[in-house]
Length: 432
Ligand code: AMP
Ligand code: GLY
Image 1 (cartoon, rainbow, N blue to C red):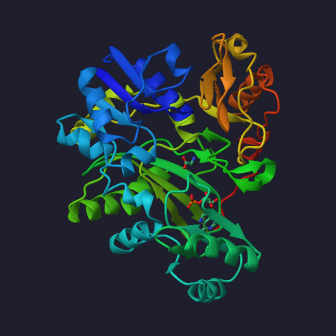
Image 2 (image 1 turned 180 degrees about the vertical axis):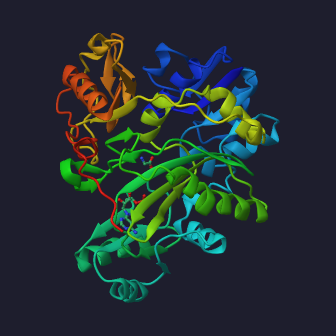
Image 3 (image 1 turned 90 degrees about the vertical axis):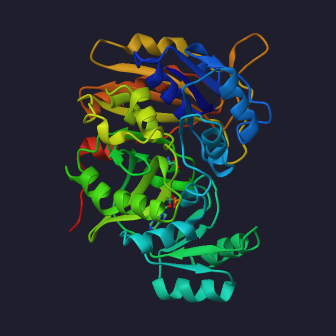
């Protein structure tokens, strides 16, 4: 099988790595990819960029691929999956209409309501007076969400009513002018990816992400600073529960509307005292959760995604998983999530492999990197690297991931030091 992967982050590096390990795969092309992906696959540019449907179709034709996997949300919302399917390509990724589950929080709420999916109560507001009334009806902590794509950064959770009002006012001035005020959902968060073919949903292993920039969830939201899987504290039947109560009803509702969902339905959950509640949907694999989930998946990835893209998931055998745990720690550039410092050399990347001892492994997935003038790897984005450790249990995986981070030198860089710490200490509990 020949596979084209669209995207350039550590998520795509993890996807490409898993595809390369699938014995059915004889070529992986990544567009545009990154220098880390370039070591294991062919990277090519896309004329017009990843959101140009005609450019991606032309590339798929040129490379004669059997499957296209779309990583990020922007190409989905731009209709790249529609263009590929219209041209006869098997494509893993939803249509622009189906991707609205991620692209519009108001649309996601409407679908959840129609499908009777448990989620937080929400008001969609178009004026600041409506916002004020909604904030007061829910009380603090306040949850204010921009109604468009904001790469996880359009959400403010705060006890300060004025901060909530200010963020809502800023959202209202943007295109569309809608803001969602939501009930605060208490309880640990889980990311669960369901591989979908429009009709059937196959859940992957749950993972947990760390969205805030600083230890102990201090500071602003980011794209994600680290993740781990499995979740020793989560109910054993969580994935089945999510499929029955959430993913399947949403798939049925989307099909009923004539916009079947093919791709990853990313269910972001809060495990509240009243049971799991949906915080958000995304229409793609999460970053950095994908790095740890795919580290543990033993079922060949290309076959699974091809089955999803061609509507035959019901004939795929039960997924196989490694018993190992996986932890990933994101190494971010100075000032991230603000405008990051870029162009610095990264040292120590090749030393990471020395940590492999047969039981524990460590490797580096690239996100914001580029090749410098002498062919050296330099930083080129906010999240620069996603360092992965695996081992027999979460403590081992965490230890080796941090040992690997310790080998890497990037001037001004920062990372969280508490990824998976509470889980290892047994300090996460479910109420109720
Ligand atoms: P989202 O972009 O919807 O994923 O929101 C980003 C982050 O904000 C989530 O991962 C949560 O940590 C937080 N968040 C969003 N909605 C809520 C909510 N209703 N209650 C509590 N926290 C929330
Ligand atoms: N890690 C969360 C996301 O990909 O949006």
